[in-house]
Length: 304
Image (cartoon, rainbow, N blue to C red; front, side, top):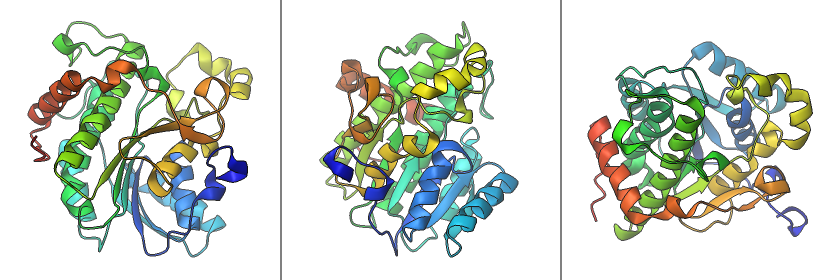
């Protein structure tokens, strides 16, 4: 790692011959992950909703790396039919070395996915659960394949309202975002446990980008106004990509959790990160797993 003080993009090894799926790769942290992987010789599938935005991202990356091997993977995590179609396209690849679940939405007004789920839980967790589940058999064909799941510092004090997952009774957008990120943390904890029990060759790793200055916070109101000042304390988007790049390509522990190691764990080089104790509660993780199978109708088949 750079200066023995943490992982940066300079520590990403060459990735020629490998294939990565990066969701939300048209902007922000996802774009930076795709940019670095492409520069290191990987084939990168950009999981994005809109073709024009994906093509714009591809054009921008190719200005930096003209021979970059990039392709748009049509993907809307708020539409399970789209998730299934994306998985069907992805499994046609000769290999997939890592699925980097980066895409998310943050603090929007109450909206719903195509299936009617509260959007933050639906996109940030259920869509990730579904895509990961559908791609696990393909990932298992490649020794050393990894699943990277992006949580957030917002999970640390979050709670899941198990009696109102769909926000039919109440909706506080910040609380719902935190709950979706706690769901991400519980998911990779449970996924790791089940993959190990099944002796799968696939490794599950969790990450968080710190607090990165990206378009993800576009619904945060007053914080947008204070952006230039607050931005001095935040990770740039390229720095926010370092934990995911570490998880996807570096020396990590199965089931590990990685994020910035600098100021209050919200910026700086990437390394081991702190997770909330309740993000490692087996009963909660199993409950979420079972509910996710029921809500999506997709079962990863990892029985324990």
